[in-house]
Length: 182
Image (cartoon, rainbow, N blue to C red; front, side, top):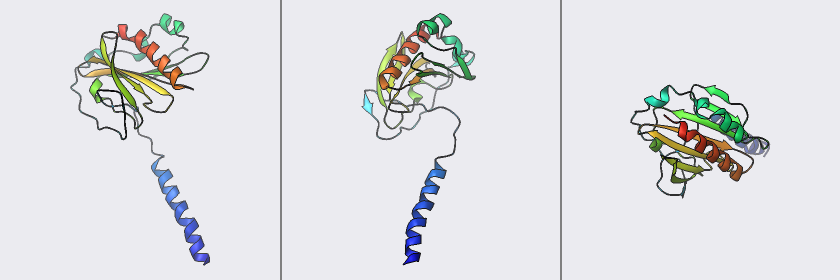
């Protein structure tokens, strides 16, 4: 009887430990989303498709340079923070919504891979084809993936206390960045 009780306690704890260990690995890179043609709710992640290159115009661009300082000030954003050669982020004031810009010189708009709960619709930002993504990472995140060339894109994502705040921040930054794209 005691042996059975111990097994009933130990086995679930071992399984929980194994499941937690499987979630602790860190993959480098950023969560990105994939292609759909209408607003959808994704039930499972889509597979990625290959890109066609042609992103040489973005390869030499510094991501923080795509948003002019006067535009950042008008949008009430913090000073830019370079994360790496292809990523930059800001915070809105006073609500502290995080806005991140990622450059993908070798990934096309069609290569965007959605999260499992993403709601995606095709749109345009300025003259560029784009995807508007609600909930790409969490229920309070929003993003615009903007095609720059046939084989390159940028993503402007935001995460805040509400979905509305994140979507507004992502849209505002995407609209200010678009005219500065190569």
